[in-house]
Image (tube, rainbow, N blue to C red; front, side, top):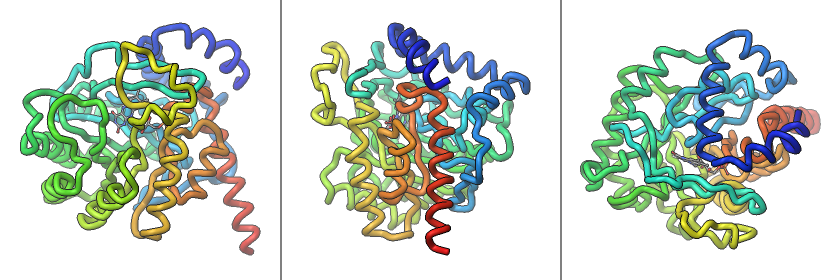
Length: 357
Ligand SMILES: Cc1cc2nc3c(=O)[nH]c(=O)nc-3n(C[C@H](O)[C@H](O)[C@H](O)COP(=O)(O)O)c2cc1C
């Protein structure tokens, strides 16, 4: 199956427009998710059935230690099928208070040799109301974890700091009231939104979290961190996250530094946006390690960026991550990757505990 994806399916898919392929995959995945028979068939090929690979963080147990990162299932249409391809959970979104068409196309490009995607989606999504309704209508399997990432609507109306904060807060309040979402992630670092200041600065993050923390919630909340700030500025943001008692951080978002690409010349001239995949790997690992060393077990760390193999996932865990997220690895390596990560994780954990015995 791995070879079939690498040598037959991927070369075909990679000739087609990436956003079109994405839309087709989401439609097929949603249809497959509707029926027990198709879920079962997919699971026979890609599901994880090995030794216990579960991870419990902040009271939530993920069946496997790998979660689909925000940006792929941004409208919450795949929650019935993702368990069958080895995921322990998904982060829906980023979801915003009002629907948004996102940035004008082109919004996505592949940089194959650099193993990266150029992303300029601009928070395209159906809006929090519609997405809550969808999630309530199609509940996932009880052991599949669904988190929701929130961001501010990418439009003029939410461009000021005040309106931006209200926008996040509306989404969080609606989710909490509806009882939707096993965890929440505050996306403070979306690199491709027009207008308005970024909340990835300590004073603005403080104002945002002060407002969001007034919302009474019983589920953990994480902050999705930028990875392109200097170390000290990154530390200051983490300190704000700790100050407001959030349960953890996702490290991290897309990279803005095109010099991190192995083949910089692959960047298409007419495109702009953040980059995913391989160029994010080392920097996110450095920041995970740094945060773990500084804070010990005070924060949950979800490692994200450039996981393209089971070994990459293990490196994220060694750096200090409690859980990993990915998007680009699934696209470049295929849907068997998640099962591979779960196997490697379970094996590694068994070896470590045998050594400790
Ligand atoms: C097409 C695409 C859309 C994304 N949209 C979002 C988003 O809406 N919110 C968010 O927090 N991160 C978003 N991301 C960032 C990913 O969640 C992740 O942080 C980043 O891609 C690095 O992980 P990867 O190397 O495994 O892809 C997006 C990434 C991709 C590839």
